[in-house]
Image (cartoon, rainbow, N blue to C red; front, side):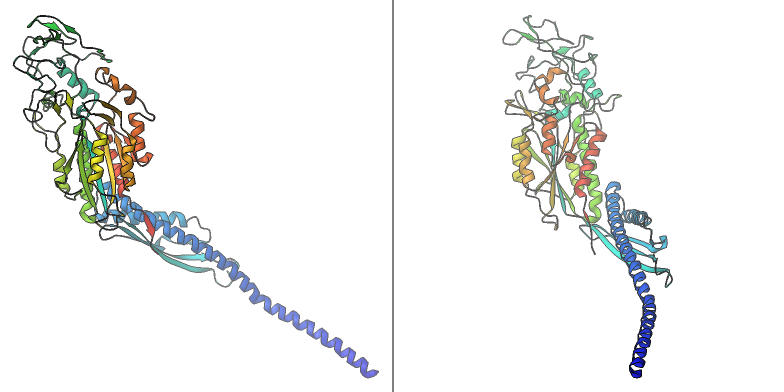
Length: 535
């Protein structure tokens, strides 16, 4: 019995000892457990900070290549200047993003951005490296922070790009470029009479424009096509619904709306009175070089060097096109990834540049092929010549179906832009959008379906709509008012906007600065190389 009691007492003592050991062991294990938990929590902050800093580095690298690429295109600058812009932009972008992180700290000295130009077809590469620290929280008694660093690379690789241009050279592009230019033209053409005939001239006025049969009401001298008898232009609207006729005998002076004319009686015994002035400088005297004949184009060109020189809308188109070619030439000097094909169109399509093949990269020759307006009175136009009357009473007007079909069979489909033989392609169409062909039997707004062929060929279609200036006399486009003035489907602007690949690929521009800006904007859009993170 005594032994049993002793054994029981010993068991109680042993159990007490075991409970003490467990408490001690638990206390000892709590220290590393707290450390592990602290490190785990701090490490989670580290992982989150690293992910955020890596995203900031990726974004900074992408931003750097975009800024460098855009600066290079926008300013026609050197590679070194574009690289410097990209470096500055990348650093600023990373600093702005990293500054929002509560746990991570990256000093300015810990940010390194390098931007370099890539070999042809060109582009930019940006490398962003960062080095900083992530503050610890529960584990700060072990160490106050952890080091963190990484490097990311982004690239924007250019594509080989072919720009196909269609330049509207129809009669309507020979209108005065501004309201003032139109007024000046109308002051110079107050004695125009449609289909008037003259002694010794067997062809009607539409084919050979001779003005010696007129005398202005304000003077007694014969009108020689010069500036000797400009007349005031009436205030708008200048609206003549019909041209009156009379049965006066030959040689009788008869009064017209603005002038008196000395014209022979026509076969029907009727004497056509002088019609209203004209704001178009359509070329009609084909017997001499353009600008040197007794026609409206010659009248317009006779003002060069005077106090009031007349600029035509096609002059602005050629100038804006050449500025675009200059931009392409500068960008192509290093990258070598750009080419251009230029076509003018009216009743037919004419290849302006290159002489053979679809496109070329000799931008000096391309600029010469487009040419410019003369710089001296009645001097010759260089490059693309003005529109002309082709046959009696037939303008070289605008046959969109015919010319666009011809172009679609002249050029090939767009490629992926990876190599010179498979360039990505865009079409830039510059026009007033008015169809008029088949001897005037087909008139109306541009048919948007004619653009579908090029879209199906992989082209991005850009459209510059060049509307008439507000000062337009109803006399010469009364029949066009419904399409000229509209904005919805079936109107000139509405149909041309649908022709473009997207709403941002359509711009309305008539004056010189806006036309130039439109072409430059389209080129930048076409050249915009998407960036990508390379690692």
